Structure formats: structure tokens, C-alpha cells
Image (cartoon, rainbow, N blue to C red; front, side):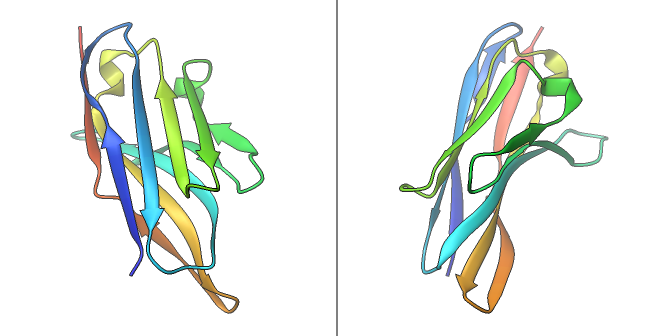
Length: 120
């Protein structure tokens, strides 16, 4: 069974910084794209940032210049460094990995989510 477990998050004042990490464990062949999503109350879940296995990244316009996504393939871990946080960044943050289970099959796996709260 594949598990993605997030850590980090918490409460921070506006303008502050937080780091999230998400580690994958279990039996699998490799992990392709990994990403961070967030879900705020009353809003739809949105993509925050994504990174390919080769390290190519893309992120939402709302976080460009403030958030940085990175990964360590040797640790099957993806990171999200968040700075200049705003109250509108408050949400539950989820990581997702496109996991290749074998040479024939891959699937998406999600973490359990971690709360980020930015106070004004």
C-alpha cells in the first residue's frame, strides 16, 4: 500500500513563513509528478504547485514569487516552502503523487492534508 504523509503547517502571522513536506512510502516503482493542492472553506480545491520527476515546476499565479516547490527523489519527498504568507493562503494543504506501481500501471495518491492558518 502506498501512503503519502504530510508534515508541517500550523498557525503563522501574515508575512511569515512555513514549510510543508510530504513523504511517500510503500511498495512502488517510482513517483512521477508530485504536487501541492489546497482547499479553503467555501472554495474549490486548487492546484498550488507541481513538480515533475526531473524538477520542472509550475505554480499558481497567486503564489508565484512566494511559494517554492522542490523534491528529493532519493527520499520520495516533496516540499513546499511558503513565504510572505497572506490570510487568503489559509487552507488545508494536500500533496498528491502520480505513483508508478509497476511498468504497467500508475495512479494518483493523496496525503491526508495539513492545516495552514495565516492570521492577519
